[in-house]
Amino acid sequence: MMPLTFTDAMSVLIIGGGRAAAIKATSVLRYQQRVTLISPQFNERCLGLPCERIDGDVYQMRPEDFAAYQLIYLAMPWPATSERRRHIERLAKTLKADGKLLCVSCKPQLGNVTNPCSRRVGEHLLALSCEYSDPLRTRSLTEKLTESLQRLA
Image (tube, rainbow, N blue to C red; front, side):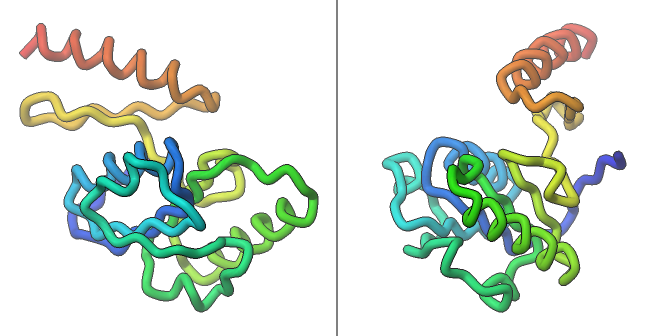
């Protein structure tokens, strides 16, 4: 693993319209990235975000539909059917082969990047990423580390 911080704005596509997509979009927007959400439907939180929204279905998308994006997040549950799982697996392989940065929240091993939980503390950026896939645990630990860092500053 190698942590990175992007210093320039990127075109970011977030696939999903629910809670996970809203959390990811809010986080990415905080760092002044150009965000597009794509989903057949969006929850209220997604609808309230200052980003582009496209009514679409990832299972109908072709690799060329991703050409405009540098960083792609799949912020959706792991599909219930084997046909849809295979579609996501093939899509992930193709996107990575095309040089895209891909984060798959429901199955991190399919992507080529993970996005650590991060908090700005004064002039510092605290980022924490764990081998386990328990975002609540990671968030809790990040908040505790943030409090400790604030006391040291």
